[in-house]
Amino acid sequence: MSFSQPTGGVSLTLDDKVVLVTGGSRGIGAATVRLLRQAGARVVFSYRSAETQAQELVKACGGGEVCRGLRQELATAEDGQALVAAAARVFGRLDCVVVNHGIWPPHDQPIATMSAAQWRGTMGVNLESVFGVVQSAVAVMLGNSANPGDDRAVANGAQALGDLGRKVKGHVVLIASTAAQRGEAMHADYAASKGALISLTKSLSSELAGQGILCNCVAPGWVRTEMSEGTLSDPVASKKALGLIPLGRAAEPEEIAGPVVFLCSKWAGFISGEVFNVNGGAVLVG
Image (cartoon, rainbow, N blue to C red; front, side):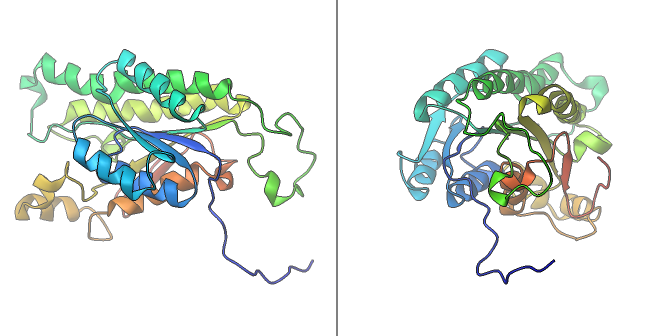
């Protein structure tokens, strides 16, 4: 078997795809929005309060014709449903959803003294609203007009590269955390909520892969964002956190965005139910 010499790089294109990114105005979310636009996708992202940053991101990504920011509180299932309904109206469809929003109460809180209000607040944002987003987004994806050849059986492994991912109707990417895998002392609410996203990923995969919707999860470790700034700027806390990472540093947001965009592409058309660890080698489990 011979192969012709390639004339260009491998294309990670998302042309004609519409992607919703929750919590997209800052940090990992903003980096993901930028990379999705570079890949050719039209993007809708949500934000809660960072209006100026959201406007600047829309402008940097080509303006409202290809990128749109929507202000939306995400604390209940109904909030998530409202966001998806609004997002689907922007460009008329949804092909991928990246569930990135979440909160991490920065203060250490022993479980013995953790208030029910803190627990409910974390679960509301990190899990209840995620249900609303996923439930509504899946309904939209299942209703997407079929692409030509969607129902054509793949006869053998020699299918042309252009047919990769042809039968996929949508992608769901949930952003979890290493805390979901190994727990996090004094942050049981956060770890439990993110652990639930891993279970949700596997459940959705079992339920939806046969219907052409692929669900996967990205589990970052420490990332240099506004949410982690307090810990990573503290010499003692930073040394303790980074000491657990074989690479010896925190990730940049773009290093999380890359795997997310890959999981929305045709090259991830045979990946479902996976936990993609992006943590510098700190956690080596699924």
